[in-house]
Length: 440
View 1 (cartoon, one colour):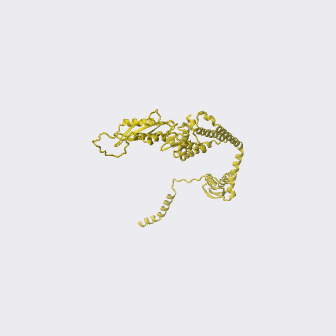
View 2 (tube, rainbow, N blue to C red; view 1 turned 90 degrees about the vertical axis):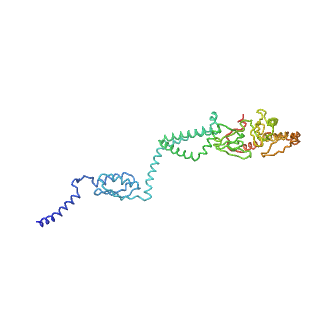
View 3 (cartoon, rainbow, N blue to C red; view 1 turned 60 degrees about the vertical axis):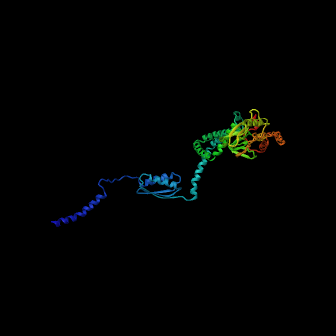
């Protein structure tokens, strides 16, 4: 009985295993559908109809077999090749697209599309020729109008504008009028969309140029402000920072000074605007000062009176405002006095007057026996039997009397002569008016 069961199992096992493998490969729930697909000939005909209507795809051939579409032939370039493959994949009934297309490498075939495009552009240009002529006339007319306004810019002076400001206004008006003509021309050509693109590009370029030429723009705008405000005139003596000299000219970028050594000094206009500037010529009256040290044992009231009297009697020193003397500092071995005096720069030279004032005060102090000690310590051995010090001598030498009479404080015309020579010989632009006109 056991032997019979073993034989039955050996016979049934192969059949059971084969049935299990079939059930694993094909699931019971998976349906098998048969759809009606487009015929191969219809696919080929549809593709050829499309490619024949597209320029550059005329030489494409196609063959379809069981839904597999094979493309062969030549196309003009790689772009058309990709487009042809995309069209083939989108056709109904195509299972797979086989690419056997080749790009045309002949020079003639390469130039043909370009020649065709050029012919189309030429045809369009001929059709738009009347509009092009009108647009060109609009630009030329408005450009001529801007130039005419620039040549007749004297009406800007009636608003009180300076020469530099007038030139800037003229350029702005000319650019504005010409820009209106360009906008009209673009409107005629139906190309106003280019305006926004051009403005965007111009904005980017303007920002880049602004950073690149920032100093030049600052100096130019500062020149406009200086020519409008007129803080100085030709020949004025000014001080900007550590630089001092006479004004020669004002240009659109810098201000030219002539130093007291006769050298030309160019200061950027932006520095003239931002730095502190002193104009010594705007007010004809100018005060000078100098320091004198005297002994601590002297009567300071008499010393001050003597110094003030000396300055009052000096030629060129104004009586109103009167000279003054102040006790400036009390030192270890001397008392520092500060003398002040006023002059009229139109008749008296500043440096000469100060020099002569120092010289005359020293002579007066020497004659009065007023000691001007050096900054050192001295030991005086006093004699108790001689209580009174020797009286100062009142005699004056002939050289001191001659020194009092020989006082020269006349104006120094050396710088004015060099300045006038520079103005006559130089042809550089000058935005300042003449010194005499500004003073009047």
